[in-house]
Image (cartoon, rainbow, N blue to C red; front, side, top):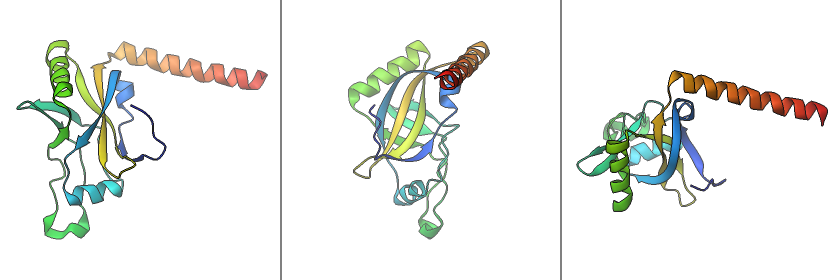
Length: 155
């Protein structure tokens, strides 16, 4: 996944890297209604509790909260509905195999709009961290910060 400066982030899951070891990340399209796109452009989505799951040989984004767009009137959308993710067949097969055999999870890292204005989801193939792993990550991060401070003050 390349980091584009022109990609506009609509929602981000900052806790994902704290709670999981991200083995691999990939980009997927997402099937949205018009009012969902408008709400995403306002940047009001929440994907902190979301995950991707397999249903009938397809991958769906579950529990992502995209609030209703008020201007849509009665033609709005269900805020927490399951949304289909658009992936190639080989990618779907690989992800389903990883989820079922290796006990991994698909976690959305961010929802963004690419240069063409299409909504995309960056998914992370993740393995859950234990409490000790989280503590170790925090210690490592704090030490990195302390090293940077020392280098700045001496340099």
